[in-house]
Image (cartoon, rainbow, N blue to C red; front, side, top):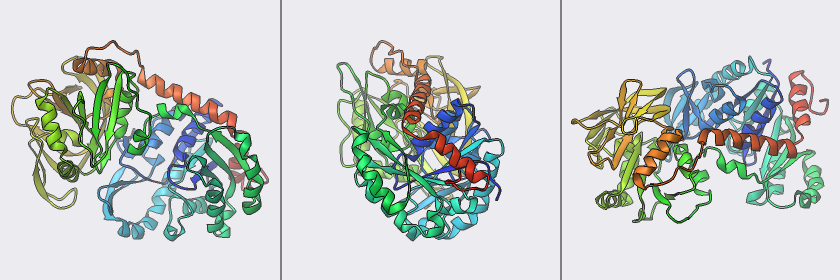
Length: 499
């Protein structure tokens, strides 16, 4: 197939930093005046974003689109897998729910998705000077190679050159790079055009002795050693692991927030603006631990499996902890699936999440939810009822929630009421993701919990500043001209050496 200039970043393993490097390169090359677009053939994440067409993609691709200064499109991530159980996931194709299947069944399904992937790639590249493509996991998982659409299967189908990304912070980066190269067959090795050593702490010159060793075994050149970048911690988290590894601040007078880690928690970047506040101490509470008794606020996040996570919450005893927290005068907010859990019941008559059934909720808000197969996907804005301050964000859910009595809603979304607020005002819930990014509302909400001075944090501006800092970081540590030459050389039908 004819394709635009493109470069694919594939990692030696998950969390090698592919998403971050892609976002940083998107911003760096956009600042050079290029029309850059991100693309990820297949992603697996319960952190999704609503696109301009009303579809959904992984949050990482939405951030990359933001780095390019363009709206996100469902074609930037044509296949999104949203895990619902340990062995099954919802399959989203070009922004819409396509199927729900077990992992073993997806192996048979995925080859049929390649036409949609290639169609989306053509669409994304139609108005681009360069497409930066992100792989998934590792191409060295050759036991899963049949029908691959995420890594080398895509690269071969499109003749896209590949930059290999190794994570030195985990240790064993020589084995990562050499082992990945060794496991690939010759027709796939020819697409490897170099490698990057990511997340280096200390003096990069100490790694120079390793370069000839890697070169001798792979024939590949190092196109950059990327030092650890603190700006990355200011970017929206891709998953719960990113949140849990961020440093915890403890200062006098902090507002303590506890977030139980649900088994299928979703859209956890809702927490990022709160974590960025200097007087907030937000802790993700792992399974097996009680919710801290000194918490001021408990947040129930979104969930890809509301009934499953409601049952999980009870097995951990967190329902008891939350009830005690409320009796002590603590605050609770539920977002999307968390909002559904706060009600009196959650019903799944059609088995949308698996087996059909109904479960009692936490009974902290007089609402009830019925799950349905039609998914709400929309960007919206409005005001919070108590403060009258503006909020904006997106909805992405498969449930319909009904208020059972004259309870006060939480939000007015352009004339449509959403959410609920208890008579005490200490328990609230809504479907709107992203509302804490609104600086005025966030300060007003936190001030209800504890009197505070505004921190002056402008969250959205801080994200853009972090993207610029990351772009500067990569400009100084990567051979950007050579990366561009590789991408354009392949687009002309040549090789990376010729470029």
